[in-house]
Length: 240
Ligand code: BEZ
Image (cartoon, rainbow, N blue to C red; front, side, top):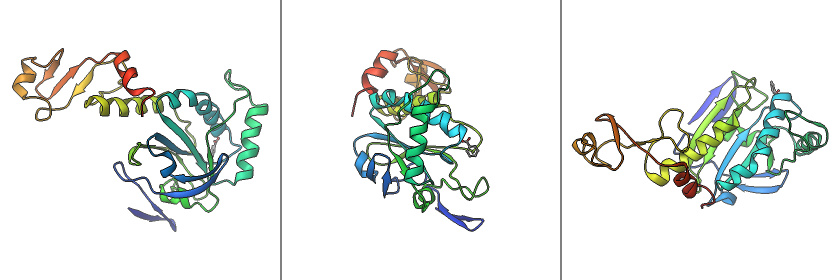
């Protein structure tokens, strides 16, 4: 879907769409996206600008959690409309000078895309002119191993992201797929999951009579079952 606002034309990919392809230069070399990430989950995220405080706090946090995402077979790829030398200088400053909330010597090992042409930002709807015509908003795209967009979250310039929530969403996406269930509000590994409504998973009568193992029904359309934290982690961590 192409949208024009304040003379900026941008496309807005949607959940379920193929991730738009692009080639780009990054702090870790050239990438061919999303093809280079085939078979892996990838979080493509944008930030407004290098050498800004909210973005610095975000990069330090995300870089510190990179191994945790890697264990869930998920790669991180950042983007802003700054150039490569700015990216390199900013990441070096973070490593050499910034100590924040117990994090120091933080090395950002995931690629940061230079997008001075704004072509990638436009293709992913990261430029939202009502918020800024010169900077990308804080967009987060969760892309699955087949290159399909599975979740999109946008934040404005002024609000830093919650990276525990991004990890929670990744694990929820993988869990709901692996176990053919849905996740209720505020779900975390170890909490009960939602059994999809009748048709895909037994009749309403079966469900109400509790004929599915360990099932709990709040009404005919709302049934849950337990999946332990161990079962979740066994299936969704270190798995292709
Ligand atoms: C920041 O990351 O601190 C920031 C970037 C752009 C606009 C406002 C804040």
